[in-house]
Image (tube, rainbow, N blue to C red; front, top):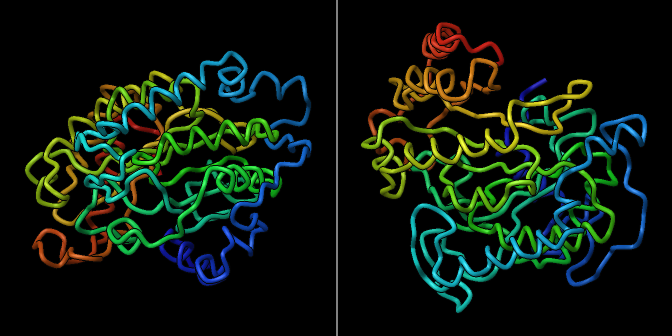
Length: 356
């Protein structure tokens, strides 16, 4: 069976669902028509645990945050950040609530490019039904080698609203997905929290995954403490010079990724699984680049030293030149088998034992 990449999944979902043309969020997956609430009470399935007493011990912490009023306070704080936007380390300081746009090219709206159960995500997230992925359009990192550049750079997707997004979460839960997986969420976090509060009132109780490019600000991640159950950040670069070359001039990517990942780990710890499915914790993705441009040897040592050798890491060997990659000598070819084997040797030598 061929590997189902994110790119194939997104394109297949768009083609199947006909999102923009039909005016549905995802007709193939049963999502609601635009503007039509679908929040009827339906008891959510107990996905992770066979008994309700056990389920209570693993209940997502966002439920208590909502009951206490803390989640509403967090939402207000996140919306305030958009008035002079500092949601991410680019610190564009534009008033997105007034329609201004920064590096991510999104003002006060948000777009969803594709969503549904995704069997091709990291193994601990998939279970038997597939990770419940929701792919947001646009991005704050903007890598020159982005494999989904039509979405991240060009904003391909459909304008959505908070009720639709809440319905998407509830539908994925009803389909048996073991998590709700927000992909490229950094620039739209206030919208996610607003929709989450609607979904909680509709019965949502499934773990949430914050699946980001890793270019996240520390204070924004701190506002998600207790909201997100699983963090799945990319750790793309160790060299600030290469980071600046391969993104839209963001030399501080390594610095901010390190700070954000440390905070993610503080909040949720090492990945916790039940019957092979994650319900809490940190899993880091690292894409091996040609000529060790991602600094894989430094990355694995940093993980071992800062987070511990039991940290879960996905060392990915599927790099291929996409978008503007061929403009750079270091990115103009695929990674070789020898480079991937070397990356895995470095991980073993650093003492990591939860990598694949």
